[in-house]
Image 1 (cartoon, one colour):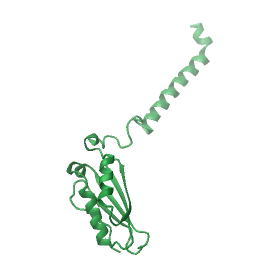
Image 2 (cartoon, helix red, strand yellow):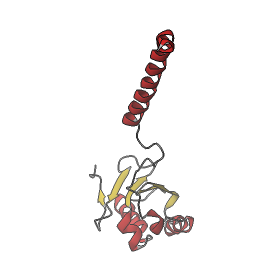
Image 3 (cartoon, helix red, strand yellow):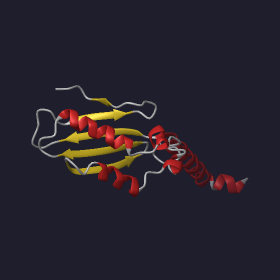
Image 4 (cartoon, one colour):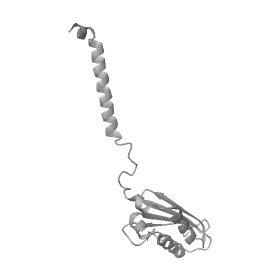
Length: 148
């Protein structure tokens, strides 16, 4: 009993330290739980089955060689972002057909899993461009931004 009375301050300090550590860990887990999980959580389950390969990206670029100066395909989670820069003289309707052509390059499984965002721009024709098309994985058609 004498040892406890003699070391009372040290014992209280150790108990307070342990309480602060436990409280800090609890607060950290409340604010930032499961840091080891991906940013998308479980929403990307099954993505391995419908992985977008470099061959698919090249296939998309190859389908649009005509009337385009560049085509970029980027996958972000369950969204495929496609940026198309058209040549001068391409109309808005022709550009929308390019969007449909792009979607046709993907398999049915890929279309059923991914959402698509198609950004079409033309540096020379700023009145009609840029236009943006969206295709939800559960829909069959592309919805385009309002015509200007």
